[in-house]
Length: 178
Image (cartoon, rainbow, N blue to C red):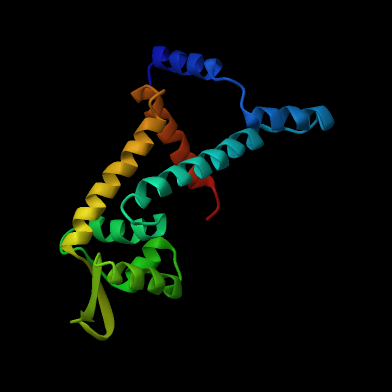
């Protein structure tokens, strides 16, 4: 980021109105002025953004008959590439779900005709989960709708600011214990 872009980012930050997190920080300062509340300022906003965007994404996917969790399953199959097939174990590991939680999602998505389960030809005890043509078309529409929701949330940012924010969040995520 150039010096001019960094200055522009500072100007944008200075222009941001006070928010609910600022009010919380001010309240803590009033009763405990010795507290260093910078972490609260960062994570309070991350939590609030996550909740608001989670709700917005849920609404976007609901138009396609999907919950966020179901979107994640079908989306994982789609982004795995042709032939869009993974084992339930691979899906569970990718989505950090228990096999029991995965089974419920797979049952619902299979009933909706978005995926199929079939025996794994390489493992008699295993199954393969494959996205259907209907599922492929639906996920392509749903991911586009979800990206539009995310894109609209970033309209107040310049491309360089988005790049800076992405890098900072990547560093933060790498430092947060798993």
